Image (cartoon, rainbow, N blue to C red):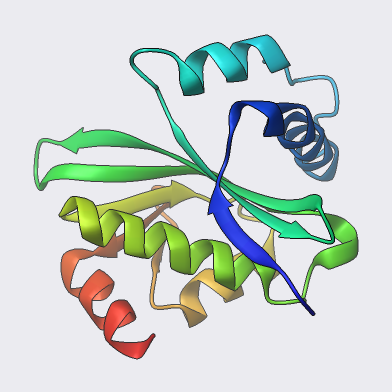
Length: 159
């Protein structure tokens, strides 16, 4: 399969929103999405972008996204939050999720973050297995996922 991973551009936001809505349906909350294309464009591409988005493109169609933003941990310092990693249902298992996660880990590494964290639903066993296989720790008592600084370095070393 031929695909590319790149930083999103403003004109990608309609397809990004479609994937966000697909995820909301998968997570059994199809009506919970309130963000609009205009919100995504203003918040991600204005003078002070609130997030960075990477897209996985296959045959000129966006089939996956990873949306991240900077955080600060009182215990660790600079950190990165992976808000969502979404791959369209038809492309799950194709390697796009790994490619997007690779890009997020490299981005965090380049920023010098001490931790990359995200959440996963406790019933989403395929996602949990995917993250654990990549070296992340699923904190079941917190339902929060951490990839430590050493974990980031170990991950990068395996690329």
